[in-house]
Length: 313
Image 1 (cartoon, helix red, strand yellow):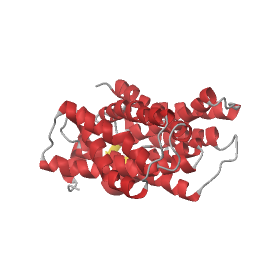
Image 2 (cartoon, helix red, strand yellow):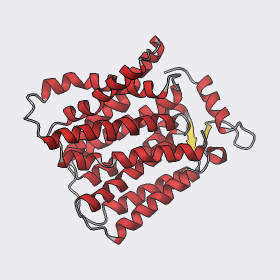
Image 3 (cartoon, helix red, strand yellow):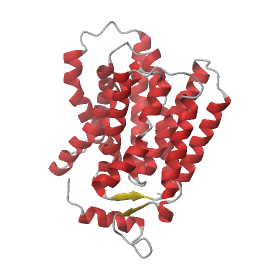
Image 4 (cartoon, one colour):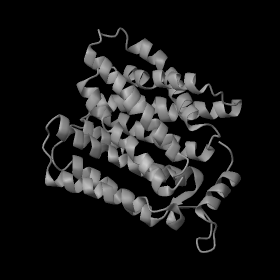
């Protein structure tokens, strides 16, 4: 797959995920974050596996358990805690710190460095998010919500790195389905233990859960997991910056919220930052710590050497 095609594929999921905060506050029952996470991922994962009927090997299953915990369970639970406790834009902004976290964890755990081009793109994109969300208004900083948002970003960042590093030889749809199923199963006992009984569900509640399951999960996760196989972790995580921009746009369209010049400038800054970061990897992206930049291997070869030399996790 061409680099540009993978970038376009990876742009749609964050745009759709930006609607999570609006749907959570406007359509879902109040104060049920674990239930929302379970109903978002578990039915879709089960449906996908019934369609694909793919069985992973024992080694693949062990790694799927770890990835599912990080990318699904420990991401969606705090995500919905943040969505319930923080304004949607603020929650999206904090979770969009993923590119910086990916860069730091990639260097700390795997010796992966990012050139200044990518660093500049990340900094520009994050500054654009700040302009979108903080400058126009005063936002309520709930401590639990802030911790939850950063926890979600940390979990997804580490899961993204491991997904890329392990590169499990599985069909993308089956890989997505197993993650959603396992991630939902890990959270199901907690939902039954802490969030029962459920109140009577209204039509808007059911429509909200269905939207999150199919529009907010099935399609975007399939596209996201497909793109991860062709893009570097810090590149794909930078596209998460589109999520708060999407949340801003939905607030304008659905809730009739006014847009300020600062917000429009911030949205444009985010797009420029993503553009800078998305330059084809053959030109600059990653090299392993200690590899000679002048005569060292290409990006693909460097990553291959990293996987071969590094100890298995």
